[in-house]
Length: 117
Length: 115
Image: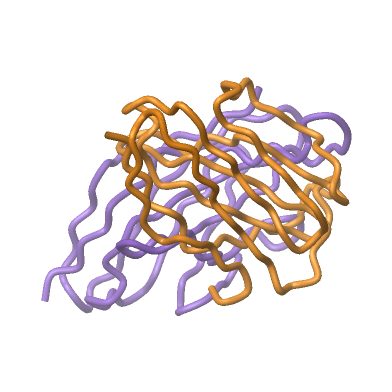
């Protein structure tokens, strides 16, 4: 079974500084990896995903994520944080094989990002 | 977010009530999902429908009963719930749930409180 770990419950960063939200995963075979963001009282909003190819994936709102197969990580990054980036961020993994259970998108517990003005 | 809508946004019910949650997707997708989001826990997949057929029931108690009358609509019927069922219930849709790279798009959720 696949799993996702987001080791930090909360990340605080000053506005304008770079931010990183960490994610590691465990899955059989090659992974498909996703990042979602959740603002208060809202649903999850898709940010970006890794399928194959370039290890650096660019997504919405200036976010990017780096896939590292040897470290089984998929950290979310942004060069310059905005106060409006403050939200809950979820990493998710899905196995690349198709078949029973392949639709299972497994989420981490989430990391609360606070950007301080 | 307007691609997937959910009603009501908030619901308070007693343990003996019967209520239903509604989800509608306007994205032309073939798969729909119900998730439960509780505080400090990962999202829990409850049900998956593909082309209106249920393909997954993730050991969900029978007091939760899903219904998918067509590929655009998904319901979650609730009866005799427990206080621990209080949570945010999220609906999602995707183009093809058998494709690994398939992206799920979420609605805003229904905040359910069971008294």
